[in-house]
Image 1: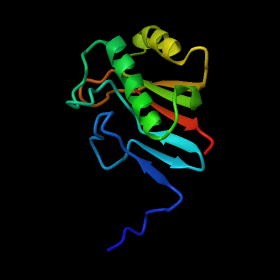
Image 2: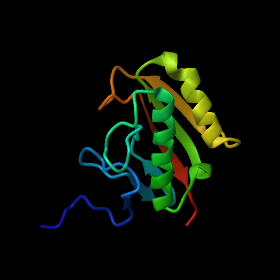
Image 3: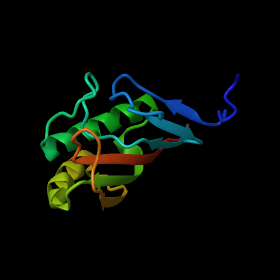
Image 4: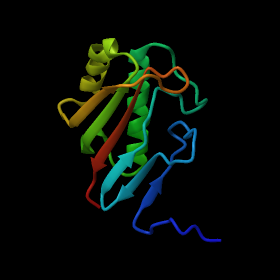
Amino acid sequence: MKNKHVNPDVKVVDTASAPEPPGPFSHAAVVDGWIYTSGMGGLLPETGEVISDDVIEQTEQSIRNVEQILAAAGASLSDVVRATLYLTDMADYSRVNAVYEKAFAPHKPARTCVAVSALPVRERMKIDTVAYKRS
């Protein structure tokens, strides 16, 4: 039986270069040049395990994961127009911000940062993005 929810205008993006999604979702979806990435934490693509308990290492890895997903969609961090950061501890804000700023500089996409009570598998942070890449 054909999935009646598949929209031919939506391209689903999955890549072996990022951790396998732990649920029924893809790495990203692309519609009319807009790329919506799923939330990515500091998981290693090879194992699906968190890189370490250090929020800086997790942030660096999460951004690498987003970069790989964007690359699979034909885009890069410079195409990101909006990002959302999720932190389990706002005391980590300045350290996460330093890593984020270095990765996105000089580009400064619109951004929201929110505190959440918990994230899966010892993650201390997660990021999702919206990018735009003209076809």
